Length: 220
Length: 154
Image 1: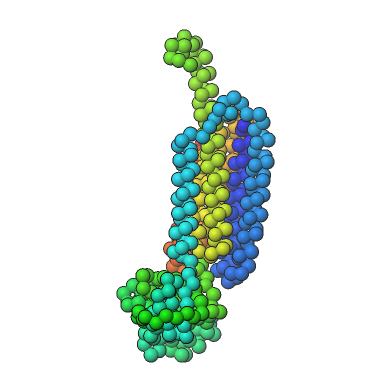
Image 2: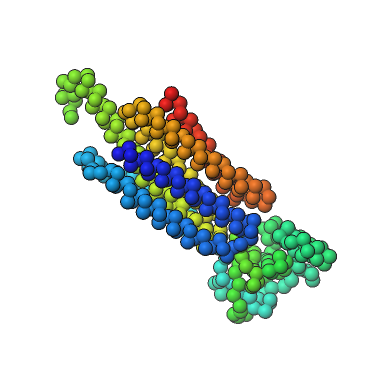
């Protein structure tokens, strides 16, 4: 019994080290190297590691245990054990569903930069917040682009984070070069379809969208 | 065994019975904690898979939380199983190895915590601060468990 426990304990700790290094490499790829594509291939590494962990765990542990004693054979999971496991799984499942639905962009549609079509089919008319409604994410830009943005007199997009909380329905359209356009939204009866783009709901009536080829990185 | 029979048992038999019952309860706890720690590690794998698919930082928070609970359960089960070892020499040797191993894992936790705290400070991102706190917590609890093992060995 003790031999098997030692091995399982060591295996768990080694696997923990593997998972920690996975997280570190993943964050390094995203933040230091800006490589979102390669980070997705890490799924293969993760699955391989998990399979190795499970194979070693399942193959090794029963063999070390040997023939179960009478006491072990009679040991059945109690109601508390089953309830605890079910509770753990349900908690994590609900967290996954919440994170997946609330933090992942949904398909919206953009019609000629005039209308925004929500996933439920509702169409909103777009009008620029002011004549020059462009701003720049200066912190995300490299030095050259930042200098150009400053020369153009673009304001920093930092106001976005508080603007949507106090303002009427708003749309923030982000482009690949880290510039963003702000539009006021009004309800319209027009029915239309356009090109798809990914958007987050910032609040009940404010949206942040990425105009292709701009790509969404939630980790940024 | 009913109470009447127990009354007739000699003190030595009674203490043997107690120790065997305590050992079986300890083994059952260790088994349960081991199963739970594997369950939590599996949940961590699922969370990290979701992370690679959807690139949402919340999944890192969930994964680290699951990993931490798994690690702590694993450490406590190891501590209990060390206590039940009858041979003091063997217990001492294994305890030394366990403490060394736990120290390595806790250093790894603190190392990754430093990275995520740096990201949190650089980007003012609360998600990363939460990750840092989770990792620091895990490292600290592991150090505490290993300290307990060290003290018991003396």
